[in-house]
Amino acid sequence: MTCTVLILYYSRHGSVAALAEKIASGVQLGGAEAKIRCIAGFNADTPTKHPIVELAELRSCDGLAFGSPVRFGNMAAEAKAFWDNTTSCWLKGELINKAAGVFTSSSSMHGGNEANLLSMMLPLLHHGMVLMGIPYSEPELHKTQSGGTPYGPSHVSGMTADTQLSVEEQRLALAFGKRLAHLSLALHNKGFSSS
Image (cartoon, rainbow, N blue to C red; front, side, top):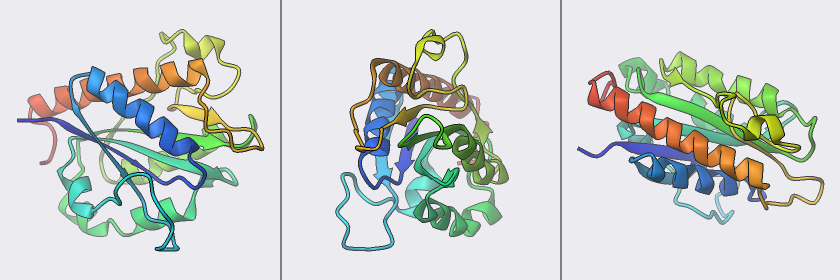
């Protein structure tokens, strides 16, 4: 049986989407199937790079990477609205014991990346997910001059909304995806996940 990690994100300018793709590569390196989906914007006509997520895909995943840009130290309203509509999953405990982690992007070094990552964990904790981040055994956490935190991958785009990830940001996203795949596989194979 295949172990599927859902990389779920909202992105307006493309930085979070770039992180999602790099995390997906790491998930595949870790031996799991990566499925990239995005959260719809409030304007339904806004084009998206990846398919819009369906709630059934969230229910059936074995692991989850959740991404959103920073909005005043918190996740984007579109991402929050998505989680606000997952009560049916919560009532049935469909995400309990599934591996999860978070990722983000901001326009400046002090734009609230870490605050956002911590707040993004809250709905995942309420769903009973098993959270993970990036350990300091990853050397890029000691070297990065832009994005990258122990709470999850991040990107600093600058005021020009540059979607080009730094070398450290890329390596941390890959390592995060690989680690998430390993944890998802372990929980899935031991029968700890709810699906």
